[in-house]
Image (cartoon, rainbow, N blue to C red; front, side, top):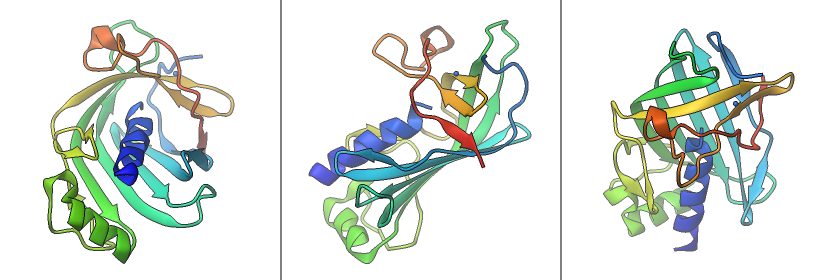
Length: 184
Protein backbone atom coordinates (compact mmCIF):
# COMPACT_ATOMS: atom_id res chain seq x y z
CA UNK A 1 0.00 0.00 0.00
CA UNK A 2 2.90 2.35 0.72
CA UNK A 3 4.14 1.83 -2.85
CA UNK A 4 0.69 2.82 -4.18
CA UNK A 5 0.78 6.03 -2.12
CA UNK A 6 4.28 6.76 -3.43
CA UNK A 7 3.03 6.16 -6.97
CA UNK A 8 0.29 8.74 -6.33
CA UNK A 9 2.85 11.23 -5.08
CA UNK A 10 5.06 10.83 -8.14
CA UNK A 11 2.09 11.06 -10.52
CA UNK A 12 1.17 14.34 -8.87
CA UNK A 13 4.71 15.60 -9.42
CA UNK A 14 4.41 14.74 -13.12
CA UNK A 15 0.97 16.21 -13.64
CA UNK A 16 1.68 19.38 -11.75
CA UNK A 17 2.95 20.09 -14.97
CA UNK A 18 6.30 29.18 -15.28
CA UNK A 19 10.09 35.53 -17.61
CA UNK A 20 6.67 33.36 -18.80
CA UNK A 21 6.41 31.70 -22.20
CA UNK A 22 5.00 33.70 -25.10
CA UNK A 23 6.26 31.60 -28.05
CA UNK A 24 6.21 27.93 -28.94
CA UNK A 25 8.45 25.76 -26.83
CA UNK A 26 10.50 23.12 -28.63
CA UNK A 27 12.91 20.40 -27.61
CA UNK A 28 13.68 18.04 -24.76
CA UNK A 29 13.75 19.15 -21.12
CA UNK A 30 14.34 17.01 -18.06
CA UNK A 31 14.77 17.14 -14.32
CA UNK A 32 17.66 16.01 -12.23
CA UNK A 33 17.06 13.03 -9.99
CA UNK A 34 14.43 13.97 -7.38
CA UNK A 35 14.27 12.04 -4.09
CA UNK A 36 10.87 11.71 -2.44
CA UNK A 37 9.91 9.38 0.42
CA UNK A 38 12.82 6.97 -0.10
CA UNK A 39 12.18 6.66 -3.83
CA UNK A 40 13.24 8.93 -6.69
CA UNK A 41 12.15 10.08 -10.14
CA UNK A 42 13.28 11.79 -13.31
CA UNK A 43 10.77 13.70 -15.43
CA UNK A 44 11.32 14.39 -19.13
CA UNK A 45 9.24 16.73 -21.31
CA UNK A 46 9.51 16.73 -25.09
CA UNK A 47 7.85 19.48 -27.13
CA UNK A 48 7.67 19.38 -30.93
CA UNK A 49 5.42 21.53 -33.12
CA UNK A 50 2.45 21.63 -30.76
CA UNK A 51 2.82 18.02 -29.55
CA UNK A 52 4.24 16.90 -26.21
CA UNK A 53 5.31 13.80 -24.36
CA UNK A 54 5.86 13.74 -20.60
CA UNK A 55 7.69 10.70 -19.27
CA UNK A 56 8.25 10.11 -15.59
CA UNK A 57 10.60 7.31 -14.61
CA UNK A 58 10.23 6.32 -10.97
CA UNK A 59 13.05 4.50 -9.21
CA UNK A 60 12.95 2.17 -6.20
CA UNK A 61 15.93 3.85 -4.56
CA UNK A 62 16.70 7.47 -3.69
CA UNK A 63 19.54 7.83 -6.27
CA UNK A 64 17.74 7.09 -9.57
CA UNK A 65 19.64 3.83 -10.03
CA UNK A 66 16.93 1.12 -9.83
CA UNK A 67 14.12 1.86 -12.33
CA UNK A 68 10.65 0.78 -11.19
CA UNK A 69 8.18 2.10 -13.75
CA UNK A 70 7.56 4.67 -16.49
CA UNK A 71 4.44 6.79 -16.88
CA UNK A 72 4.06 8.40 -20.31
CA UNK A 73 1.51 11.07 -21.20
CA UNK A 74 1.20 12.31 -24.79
CA UNK A 75 -0.90 14.94 -26.46
CA UNK A 76 -0.92 18.44 -27.82
CA UNK A 77 -0.23 21.80 -26.23
CA UNK A 78 -1.03 25.39 -27.03
CA UNK A 79 0.02 28.74 -25.70
CA UNK A 80 -3.40 30.40 -25.88
CA UNK A 81 -3.70 33.89 -27.28
CA UNK A 82 -5.85 35.07 -24.38
CA UNK A 83 -3.31 37.68 -23.40
CA UNK A 84 -2.34 35.66 -20.33
CA UNK A 85 1.45 35.47 -20.54
CA UNK A 86 2.79 32.04 -19.61
CA UNK A 87 -0.47 30.16 -20.12
CA UNK A 88 -0.07 26.66 -21.54
CA UNK A 89 -2.93 24.28 -22.23
CA UNK A 90 -2.46 20.52 -22.56
CA UNK A 91 -4.85 18.11 -24.30
CA UNK A 92 -4.08 14.50 -23.47
CA UNK A 93 -4.19 11.86 -26.21
CA UNK A 94 -2.69 8.88 -24.38
CA UNK A 95 -1.47 7.72 -20.98
CA UNK A 96 0.60 4.55 -20.61
CA UNK A 97 2.19 2.90 -17.59
CA UNK A 98 4.99 0.35 -17.79
CA UNK A 99 6.44 -1.65 -14.89
CA UNK A 100 10.14 -2.10 -15.61
CA UNK A 101 10.83 -5.19 -13.47
CA UNK A 102 9.17 -8.60 -13.12
CA UNK A 103 8.51 -8.26 -9.37
CA UNK A 104 6.87 -4.87 -9.82
CA UNK A 105 4.71 -6.20 -12.65
CA UNK A 106 3.65 -9.01 -10.30
CA UNK A 107 2.88 -6.45 -7.59
CA UNK A 108 0.81 -4.33 -10.02
CA UNK A 109 -0.97 -7.54 -11.05
CA UNK A 110 -1.66 -8.58 -7.46
CA UNK A 111 -2.97 -5.10 -6.57
CA UNK A 112 -4.93 -4.84 -9.83
CA UNK A 113 -3.34 -1.41 -10.17
CA UNK A 114 -5.48 0.92 -12.27
CA UNK A 115 -8.15 -1.81 -12.29
CA UNK A 116 -6.02 -3.87 -14.69
CA UNK A 117 -4.94 -7.46 -14.32
CA UNK A 118 -2.71 -7.85 -17.39
CA UNK A 119 0.57 -6.31 -16.20
CA UNK A 120 3.88 -7.56 -17.64
CA UNK A 121 7.38 -6.19 -17.17
CA UNK A 122 8.59 -3.86 -19.92
CA UNK A 123 5.08 -3.71 -21.43
CA UNK A 124 3.19 -0.42 -21.36
CA UNK A 125 -0.55 -0.50 -20.83
CA UNK A 126 -3.18 2.14 -21.49
CA UNK A 127 -4.20 3.81 -18.22
CA UNK A 128 -5.95 6.90 -19.63
CA UNK A 129 -8.86 7.94 -17.43
CA UNK A 130 -8.14 5.28 -14.79
CA UNK A 131 -7.39 5.63 -11.09
CA UNK A 132 -3.94 4.26 -10.32
CA UNK A 133 -2.80 4.17 -6.70
CA UNK A 134 -5.35 6.83 -5.69
CA UNK A 135 -4.25 9.11 -8.56
CA UNK A 136 -6.68 9.89 -11.39
CA UNK A 137 -4.79 9.64 -14.68
CA UNK A 138 -5.93 12.12 -17.37
CA UNK A 139 -8.47 10.68 -19.79
CA UNK A 140 -7.92 10.91 -23.54
CA UNK A 141 -9.17 14.29 -24.83
CA UNK A 142 -9.11 15.78 -21.32
CA UNK A 143 -7.42 19.13 -20.78
CA UNK A 144 -5.11 20.64 -18.19
CA UNK A 145 -4.64 24.39 -17.93
CA UNK A 146 -1.12 25.16 -16.76
CA UNK A 147 1.53 27.81 -17.02
CA UNK A 148 5.17 27.69 -18.07
CA UNK A 149 8.04 29.92 -17.02
CA UNK A 150 11.19 30.03 -19.12
CA UNK A 151 14.37 30.74 -17.19
CA UNK A 152 18.02 30.78 -18.18
CA UNK A 153 18.28 27.34 -16.59
CA UNK A 154 15.22 25.79 -18.28
CA UNK A 155 11.47 25.53 -17.69
CA UNK A 156 9.22 25.51 -14.64
CA UNK A 157 5.58 24.49 -14.81
CA UNK A 158 2.75 25.66 -12.56
CA UNK A 159 2.33 24.66 -8.93
CA UNK A 160 -1.28 23.55 -8.45
CA UNK A 161 -3.11 24.01 -5.16
CA UNK A 162 -6.68 23.61 -3.95
CA UNK A 163 -7.87 26.84 -5.60
CA UNK A 164 -5.70 26.67 -8.71
CA UNK A 165 -5.68 23.00 -9.76
CA UNK A 166 -5.50 23.48 -13.56
CA UNK A 167 -8.99 22.09 -14.16
CA UNK A 168 -10.11 25.21 -16.07
CA UNK A 169 -8.53 28.39 -17.45
CA UNK A 170 -9.82 30.24 -14.37
CA UNK A 171 -8.16 27.69 -12.09
CA UNK A 172 -4.78 27.80 -13.83
CA UNK A 173 -1.87 27.64 -11.31
CA UNK A 174 -0.64 31.11 -10.36
CA UNK A 175 2.88 30.28 -9.20
CA UNK A 176 5.72 28.16 -10.51
CA UNK A 177 6.61 24.75 -9.10
CA UNK A 178 10.14 24.37 -7.74
CA UNK A 179 10.88 21.55 -10.21
CA UNK A 180 13.30 22.69 -12.92
CA UNK A 181 13.28 21.06 -16.36
CA UNK A 182 16.69 21.69 -17.92
CA UNK A 183 17.24 21.70 -21.69
CA UNK A 184 18.84 18.41 -22.74
